[in-house]
Length: 262
Image (cartoon, rainbow, N blue to C red; front, side, top):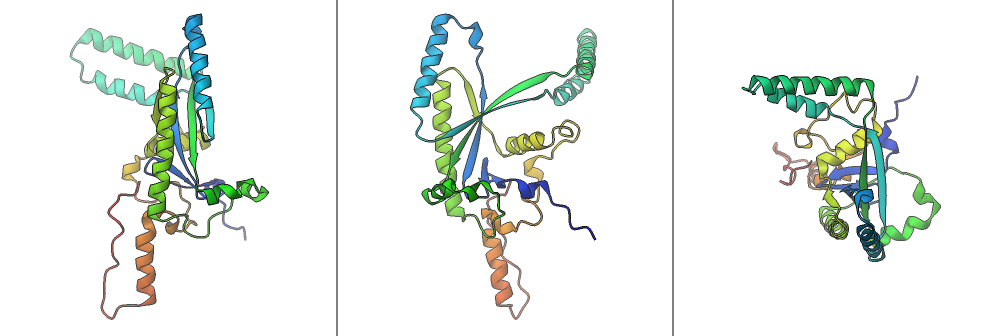
């Protein structure tokens, strides 16, 4: 009898996504910055030299490692076209409505015969405690292993998140001085980024639910215990206590912390 199929999530070093940061299975956290590039070729020679020297100074000022990722993928214009079509229904000017309908039809025909590609630039910032970083040099650190217990408690997560956000803000300020626009991805954008990266063929056809509407943990396989997420720690502890000391009268398990889980 064939065994249970292994989920792709079992091979990913991601334990969860919460409060705009990624929690890795090794106990570290990541923040992702999206960078809007500048058109270097349109700058004068003096401006180009200034950008190069500013970028050199930015790199020399770094006190922690960063990762730069360039992603090329097919441009998804479906949401843009749907928004235009909904606007057409509200137009009272017949000439403007006809022109907008022609424009939507032209774009739909264009994307049906040609692949319009877009490039996205990301900077990934990491934070891990000294104890976590000490073990990164061993060969076993390159092998993904599913965590057997809680990665961190809520206090640790709050501290780690604060540190990685401070680093992300430092990177954002440095790149902004060069003339680039930088924004940190929120929880919904992180989910969409990973979804489109690992599901490029169906990402344009099957839309994701908004993170605020999800009731289950984010980026978490069925086999992973809920206690790998800091937000479920109190609930798991309460349930364990209730099992070890069953009450004489029916009681209700205390609710989880009020902080919403995204």
